Figure (tube, rainbow, N blue to C red):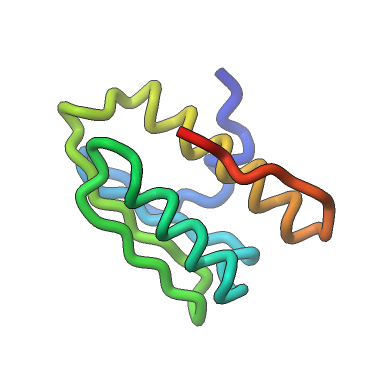
Length: 95
C-alpha cells in the first residue's frame, strides 16, 4: 500500500485519534464534505474539521478499523484533496 500522500499531512497519530492538515481543507465546502463522509464510516466516532487551520481530527474505534483500512481511507482522501487543491477533477472517496 502506498501511503506517501497521506504521510505528508498527518500531524498526530495514536490509536483511536488522528489529526490531518491539508490546504484543501481550508475550503469550507471541502471540509464539510470530508466531515460528512468520514462520519459515515463504520467505526468512526467523531470528526471535527476546522477550515481556518485546514485540519481534520478523527476519533475512531481502533478495534473496529484496522490500521490497514485506516491508512487506505486516509490515502484515498489525501489523493482526493491533492487533486482538489490543484484544481483537477476528482471523485470523492467512497468507503
